[in-house]
Image (cartoon, rainbow, N blue to C red; front, side, top):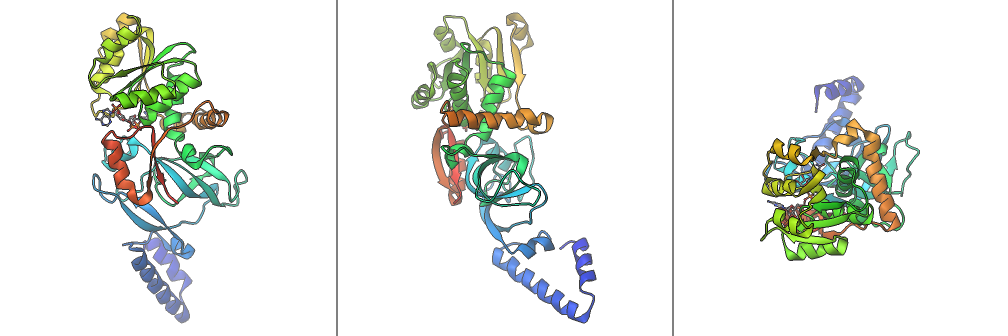
Length: 376
Ligand SMILES: NC(=O)c1ccc[n+]([C@@H]2O[C@H](COP(=O)([O-])OP(=O)(O)OC[C@H]3O[C@@H](n4cnc5c(N)ncnc54)[C@H](OP(=O)(O)O)[C@@H]3O)[C@@H](O)[C@H]2O)c1
């Protein structure tokens, strides 16, 4: 317990009866701490609510995650308590738990960047949501838990015919796909778009938006024939299995040497280099991620010779730099989903207690589309 909290408690209990009450309070705290398996209480306020919920915790980087009871906090102005139903698992969660993500979290912390659920409680200042509303939200961490307290501006209502699983698959992957294709590459109808790791979460969302919203011609590149087939079902026009062939040579053949207008690239390393070579005149390549673990360097002469552009995308940076654009991505994804233009592919669903299996499933490249952690 902090000195400040001790000090304020001291002032409250300055009489003899107060000292007895204080002792009872400490004993109750110690008992609750023991019951919950916690080594320390956050502060006195948390104890007064006496509510707890299960949360995934990364207690040490690169070690298996654990599930613990943690104490609920009281709502602050603008906040909403959500009972989480589904949490989307992202490659970034895995990197964060290995200490390799650009946004660093110090253990112990709870991963989880996107979730859907039901509103349990709102603070008095919130009038846009009420108890029982179905919502989807995004955050930097903490969503892999039974409960999440969000700022109401980071929550969106889920349309009636969109399920909790589908909603939880939208914020990160579809948000990234929309920003990459529309905000960064300015993709036009009829243009050719090459998507790498096209059966992954970001990749398949990109195929879906490019083919079914933007009416682009999609060449989907993935690491196996079955992954390629899945992208065709999602709307890809042609595919390349780059596990046994040169991406650059295959794209040349498929485009009669013309190349593609846009590349959305999530792997890095040699795949990025081959994709860069696959651009046509005034083509654009968007750097989205390095799932293969290698950050490529870019030969600037190639950009000059072909009049091509390399663009970066860091989705979550938009939250602070340009909130209207950031917020519009999820609003658009929900609208596209409600209209039936897009449909997230849920590749696998794991229970909260199977979170370590879910992480392994993604790192072993077994996953397709979005992996969901079902919380309740
Ligand atoms: N910039 C942003 O704002 C942003 C947003 C979302 C995601 N990302 C990044 O985009 C990348 C993909 O994320 P995701 O959530 O779509 O991941 P995902 O669903 O796990 O897909 C990643 C895919 O990459 C391919 N891959 C190639 N080499 C790999 C390797 N060594 N290890 C693992 N996978 C490998 C695999 O497909 P094949 O087997 O078909 O090759 C795998 O399915 C990550 O680097 C992530 O951090 C960035």
